[in-house]
Each structure stands twice: as C-alpha cells, then as structure tokens.
Amino acid sequence: MRSHFESYYVHPKNVHGELLVLTDEEVHHLSRVKRHQKGDRIRAVDGLGTAYEAEVDRISKSRAECRITETRRLLGEPAGELTLVQAMIKGDRFDWVIEKCVEIGVKRIIPLITENTIVKAGSGKINRWRRVALGAMKQCGRSVLPEIAEPRTLKQTVTLGADCQVRLIAHGSEGSRTVRIPEEPAVRSPKAICIVGPEGGFTDDEIRMAADNGFTPVSLGPRRLRAETAGIVLTTMVLSQWGELC
Amino acid sequence: MRSHFESYYVHPKNVHGELLVLTDEEVHHLSRVKRHQKGDRIRAVDGLGTAYEAEVDRISKSRAECRITETRRLLGEPAGELTLVQAMIKGDRFDWVIEKCVEIGVKRIIPLITENTIVKAGSGKINRWRRVALGAMKQCGRSVLPEIAEPRTLKQTVTLGADCQVRLIAHGSEGSRTVRIPEEPAVRSPKAICIVGPEGGFTDDEIRMAADNGFTPVSLGPRRLRAETAGIVLTTMVLSQWGELC
Image 1 (tube, rainbow over the protein chains, first blue to last red):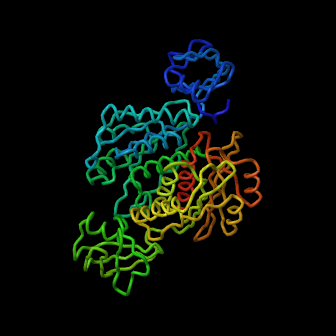
Image 2: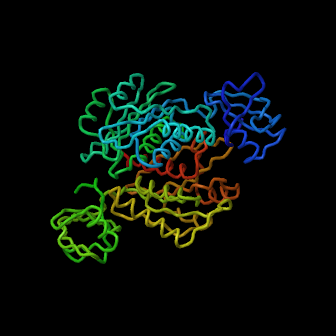
C-alpha cells in the first residue's frame, strides 16, 4: 500500500465489514474536487491507526460507499511517541506548528498556558486546530490522528512525563547553558515530552518547576528561534534521533 | 554582548568611526515603535557580520545617530555554511521557509525552478523575500544577512556544490530509498548544499542529473512532508548535526 497520496478520512463507525462509507466534506472532496467515479481506487484512514485501500462503488450527494480491498495498521506512524507541549501563540502560527509537527510525526500536542502566555483559546479555536491536524494527517500519509488536547497550565503538564525516557524543556535563556538532547534510549517505542515556551520565555520559577519534575532545560543554539520555530525544530531533532526522518 | 534582543539594521556605509547612523524604517521603528530616546542602548548589525552595541545620541525624523560602544564579529553566526536550494512554492509558504531557515542558520537560499515548478518570481517577489530574510536576521540575533539569490534552474544549481562536503537532494519517492545524512566531516567550517523539490517532486531525469553531480538523494522518512516542511526539516537536521542547535 502506497503512503504517498492523500487519504480520505472515514469515521470508524462508518466501516462495516468490507464496506466503508465516506460522509460530509469527504464526499464533496471525492466527487467534486478529485472527481472520482465508480471503480476508482482511493485510500482512507480512520485516525485510529487503520488505513484502507478501497474501490469507489456508489456516490450520492451525502455519502460515498467504497469496497475495502486492503487493510493496514499504523501506516505512516512512527514507532516513538512524542508529545509536544507548545505555549499558545498568536495568529495562524499555532496552526503552522500543528500542521508541520503532524507531518514530522508528533503523537500529541498540548496547548500550554504559561505566566507569559497572552493568547486564550476557546472551543472554536481548539476545533480549528483539530481540523488542521486532521488535514495534515490525511495529506502526509499517516493513519493516526494526533491528539490536540485541551489547553493546560505548566503545572498540569510537568507531571505528565513519568513514562517518558526523554523530557525536555526548551529554554532560550541569556546564559548559554547548552544541553544536548539525550541519546536515544534503547527501547522499541521510545516516549518523549518536549515543552516549548511563549515569545516572552519561561520565568525562572517555571523552569525550576519543570526541572524538579525531571525535565532537562535545552538551549536550541545561539540564534533566538521564534516560538513556532522552536517547536518544529525540537520535534525534528527528536524524531530524527529516533531514525524516523530517513 | 547579548544576542537575545532584536537588532536594528545599519547599512555598512552609515558607519563612520564611532558613529553609526540608522535611516529609513529603522528610525521609525526606533523612535515610534520602540520609543527609544537619547541615552538608550541598542544593538545594530550590518548584515556583513559586524554587530554593534551603541548608545542613541540624536534622533531626527530621517536619521538616528548612535555612538558605538562595542563591536563584535560574526555574532550569532554558525561556523558551517548551508546553502538551501528550495523549489519555489505558492503563497506565503516560501516566505515561511526563508524566515524559519534564517533563524535556524542557513547561509544562502536559492529559489529553484524545476520541471514541475509552476511558480514564477519577478523582482517584486525576490525583494519581498530579501526583506523577510532581513527581518529574520534582526529578530533572531544574527549579524550576517543570508543571501536570497536570483532563481536558478536545477542545471545551474547542481554544479555549485563542488566545495561542499555534504550535497543532498531530498527525494520523497515512492520507493523507500532511505539514505542517512552523512556524518559531519572533520572540517572546521563545513559546507553543505541541500536541494528540496516542489510539491510535484523531481523527475527521474532531474534526480539523475543531481546524482551525476555528486548529490545524494535522501528520503526524509515515510511521511510525505510538504515542500516547505522538507526545507525546514533538512536545514534543521544538517545544522543540528553540526552542533549548531544546542
């Protein structure tokens, strides 16, 4: 099964034996944008790790019925699980972090509220972020929809990494404490959690709280990376170290 | 000298002994946005590798005269030189590649024209890209303005890497040829050139031409990265390997 063409999203409840039913905007995309017809082969993913190759059988305005010809588990998924905890930032830059980090291979993104965070997120914004993640999953050939969690405070987040071999907090401080990302642990499905702060940086108290909970402060070098760049760079460095980007 | 606050840009011809003169939008930013006054300390960079710490002396509508108190060479600059050759892409996504890769530490970006490239760039667009690079340089604490070259074809580009230890072409092919990025060469100022293609990918002929000129095709993993993501990820991987991101 090829991973290099765009997938449709099929809700798990719409898979019945050999039958797979696309609904809502997926039907529109299939029939109007891609102009697929009966007999065409498509791919669909359920966001829970199952990818289907299927043949279009019947298209109506509200649904497209497809016959499953092949099923695969965890297509396009990394072995390791990276949780990115990213302080919320203004405008569409948080959307960018989500899109890029889903492509690169993040498992979960937790929008973070810190002392210097000035952005707020209501359910409308969170729903938009989830649609961005869904779009990126379909586009890049993954089969698991990365979770976009409800926003949390740092205090609620630092206790989450107990089962992670790698716990990092990006800290672009004036002092040039440069800590390398620890070597890949010798486990089959490594877990990592990475925290990236807001433009204003973390306070000393916040860094101390993270350190007290086992997080290693890492500098990302002498150039000051914008918050969204730091999230993408750190995700790339961890996934690359896990051998997931080659 | 701290590298972690935003710099002003001073044209090299506006530095005279101990005097440094800001002009144009830099004056506006200094007096109107940042509301600096006589006696305030600022930092300026000339885009050619010199960073100045200076004290504001006299502000008029069109110029701000500052007295240089400290000078440093190559502040915020990586030791290695990475040239990113990135196929032109639509909308503001090329701007993003420029902004992010300047922050990460690229030396030069060459907009690439390939067989599958549908975007054209006139002088207006190239000037915009150069302004994006200038803004990113000032923001991230670099002192050299990365070059945004005139667009070139692949044929014009593949002969450029003769003095580079690392020559890569990102190739998200269906076949899963996975090549690791070669280990860091044992030179003090390593040079690399990385080519990233358009959404439609490179043709077989293009990959062959690059390979014939010493470029190694590298896959960036099983997930299909968008063109702009590929540029940012590859830049991160090379700079990270050079120890420039820790």
